[in-house]
Image 1 (cartoon, rainbow, N blue to C red):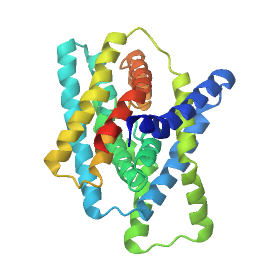
Image 2: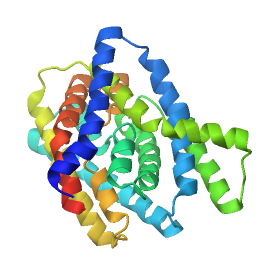
Image 3: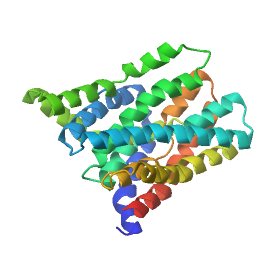
Image 4: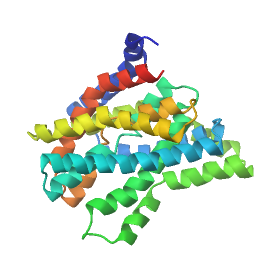
Length: 301
């Protein structure tokens, strides 16, 4: 697919919806907590259930994707530590920098982008990526930034408050044990899943509109290079190292090129880890991903 077509057919629709959300939030100031909860507790879990039960993903694909995500997180953590040493960051800045590099937007941005770029398996693979990443981030990641504030047990239990865990269990039961949901239950789940793309992107735009931009540009640029440039190169190396099936390898590589997740701002704000920097990293990486994600898709297709 020519690069211009990727920009027009995949990237442009994403940023049109993000821009609409941004403009609407600036003008009308919607209740973001309510919208985010609908997305997190209804739309995304429904999408996980539908995509995983209807996809052609084998157990090997799920295993390979899970191992890839785990090793990717470890590699990004090492990268963030190296970057922190080079930049001589203090402890609070090290934590925020690590979050901005390790935690990429697999949900609001990744779901729509993967579905548009890889219509056959993109959404199913990205569902696994999101589930594994959220589990790791809301256990290891949360524990990492909250050392001395909450216990390891509490950090671990925090992940089980996330609805994607139960969506995965339901999808596993449907797929492997022949569980059949009645039509009046399954049809609403499908309707919710169909709302994912517009709702995720509009909500992302609204979240960006509420993000305060500060002057921490030097650190933000370092995070930007790690997240949008070095990360997909690491992903490519892991795909080769693990000998990932070529049907899902491009999806995994592209998934590592997505911008910093908006949740890094929320976590940094909660635990005092330089939320000003985290906000810059989210905004700048999302804007610059217009070009970088398109380039990665072009190279792997």
